[in-house]
Image (cartoon, rainbow, N blue to C red):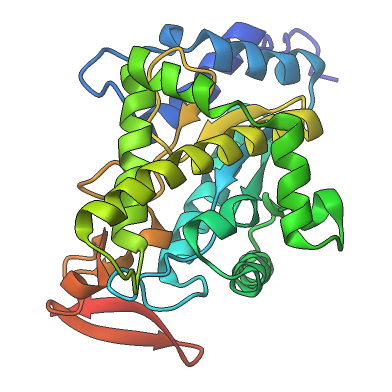
Length: 314
């Protein structure tokens, strides 16, 4: 009870609190329209999702599909397990959740929805590598005491079924048709950018292809539609399993989109992620993402716990 003659501070309104939470995310927004103004009011879907938690006084739940597995290209990454790029990214996401507590005492937690298994066959990464990557993410979260984070993957949905059967079941239940996606790509610039970005990644990541460059590109254009189908299916499955959540994305998003794009680390390319690159530590303390082939020309590879972790420049 406050002392006699004083009044308790008024509680901020739901709208004010939701705006304050979104303000924490805006500096790290990964935007598909970076030149467009982005005030809090430009994100009504996210404000509405936040209000569902704040009005009830519940802990906020963010869901973030991503952290699938390392690229299979040795020109891009140091190995198939998470390294300093993932550690820094997870630490940032945990700190972001902790910052929410400062403006909203119930705080927030984030579910990392590791999506490697959903399209592992299409990106040509073996399932045992994806298992090892996801398991190490969970171990990293535990070692670093990142108490606001957890990992969710296809094993949490369909248990011990063979992965091909799991993928087939999710695809059949949730995936849009290729014809629907082709129509979207023709009509929507953001859909086209996603399709082209995934095609580029598949082309760059494919190793030991026995054929011409044009044949590889044709194959990757086909696989890109499959990746988008599975990604959409995974997103719908997440929404079903976590119906009350604020949906984040590692892909660039426009204002007003259903998902809020979030940047994990500094990078010149909005599509670059820790699982497609190596983190470089510069003398001024800055961490930057780039291809392994480029990074190793700039400095030396540093080990952590006996494994390649990052590149240090001098």
